[in-house]
Image (cartoon, rainbow, N blue to C red; front, side, top):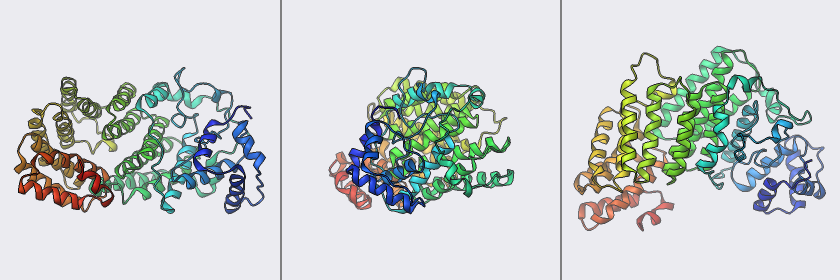
Length: 495
């Protein structure tokens, strides 16, 4: 017991709208449903949890997490509730004096528990049809501050550090260990193959249809990681966890579950660092940066990219660094920093061509090829064209090159390329060509579950307003209005 109020629990309790008596009764009912009928919580005990910081013993924290998750319609973990017991080391600041951002860093050895708990709650939301999108996104500056020292730490030293946990606290993973067994190299290879399948499906059809399957697979891997396997199985298993967490985050972002996506990107970075893969951790953070740019927060994206670039390590291949620079350039373009964007894209091009290919890229980088390089350049120049209309011509050139190079199975990327082309044409005052590319994008959207494609289409729709008097573009506008998801149609048409 800390003697201090548990402000995290108090805040969420206020949002949930329960009385203390209602929460106590709900805990008892939920505990019985989870196989703990002997639990007897009352109002005074709930008051102590909130007012004096008393941390209940297992399974109460897990019961509370399940109740708050269902009540609030978003994932709420034990750590979100402030109910994790720490030893002496847990009372220290997590990042060398920087303010600790709850839910971003955690003690060594907790990653498997965190990802297992978070995915379990996410699956529960899926089963019950809840949206899970009501939480707020953490700022990029807060994320980078909290993660900086952790990302730069020596993983070997961290692995050897003693874990000082309260012996009475049950690790949430421990409750599920009966479901997992030690695995061998063949099982790891099978998991790695499944990641490739999920990744290809996501590139072709968007994240909506397979997100639940990826989250479920990640939940299983979290259980496997509750065991200490011999090397190289353990490090490869952490690699699978990182890859699945990135995919879960990207698919969540793809369907508009933004806070959930951000949490998965942070979990992916942790998993990659647990496995000693700094470049993978940085790529996971770069996904969070892309998410920030998409949501109109490029300054937060630049904070994250500084951390990703500084923490990726000397072993990072030139092509990986090139990819990181393209995301940084997109953020700069969003802020109208044309000179900085061009300089950053120049670094990306130089690094990309300098990669001799003598070292095979990791499997998570195989999706970033020359087509993606041009696609990101097109997006950056198209974004800059909002501030410098002359940039639209360069955006067209890169988008056309990207489309020429796109391989089969990259359907979502092709939609983005066509939207970039159409948008650049509208800005360059070429509505006839814009209409052609916009219709190519529209014709492919029905087979794709990516909400991000609709977001980009709305941005393009805004550019059509100056040509609304044209019969051709007027018809295009009507077709876009009909194609947009119903709940968004009115707001889009008003812009």
